[in-house]
Image (tube, rainbow, N blue to C red; front, side, top):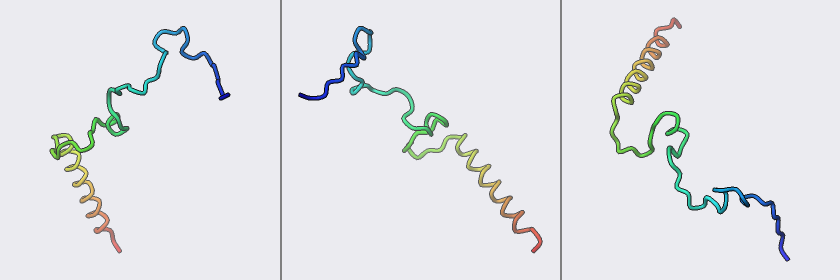
Length: 73
């Protein structure tokens, strides 16, 4: 005699019977993909937007290091 909780979920409502164990999810699978449109292991090529972000970020970091180095000691 096992525990039997007959909650009634899925009874009488169309589309609620069964489970979604074999469902195939659509859309991005990670938060990064949802937020930024990135894909893990994307083939090794950088698109123009990624190259621009990396270039501007590198330039900004170089300027910050130069300013820090120029401060009087």
